[in-house]
Length: 285
Ligand SMILES: Nc1ncnc2c1ncn2[C@@H]1O[C@H](COP(=O)(O)OP(=O)(O)OP(=O)(O)O)[C@@H](O)[C@H]1O
Image (cartoon, rainbow, N blue to C red; front, side, top):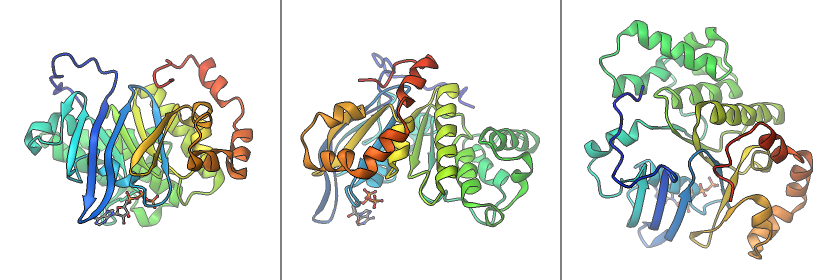
């Protein structure tokens, strides 16, 4: 879909599809982020964690232009999107896909029609036959049966809705994928399958993934690095072993707690398996 190649700014080397510097977000007097910095590396799945209300979703919304920051710079593919007019960043906006919490599917549209929404928005010239073909392909790509394309969200299970939301997020062949708590509400088997799908699609499609989660299994199973939000900033970013070396109390409590240790144990070897698959080491600190 992205034939309308974005003119990358001179000097941009695509190592960091997202760079954030000095980001401040506030609602009235309530400051959510205060001079937050973050780099997301090309090709990685970056897990974003933090206590409830630390601003993970607000951070994601800032990057995709749904939250106007009070201060700071956000570059996506080398282009500063914070002070740009919507028209100026259209070439960036069609290079990302978003799976919002809960899927956020349009309930009156079928799965295929949901997948076609971004296509129609960015490529109004596409004819219906092609739109149907793309929607069917994206539906199957996310592990749904082809028949699911003609179903309405109310006819799908929770796991199927997530996959349908993912199909829509992938409709424009994005390079960047934003996932907001993708496994929330799924049973453990469904969650593990969704994790596997995320890893597989990331590797085969060459995606960079910004993944907000509370799911420790997801962090251990598929994330290359983890960014920790606390104290209005990203206080640390690295692999889980690297984070364990930091002495911030929240990080210690989070990753050394019994649930984290259980998740670590059940995913022992996940890192080695990823390396064995010869995954490029982008995203490794
Ligand atoms: N539109 C808004 N108006 C006012 N306050 C908001 C708005 N959106 C978010 N907030 C506040 O910003 C803070 C961060 O919210 P955010 O949803 O980003 O947290 P989060 O880290 O994603 O939390 P959770 O893990 O519970 O989903 C919260 O205190 C929230 O109440």
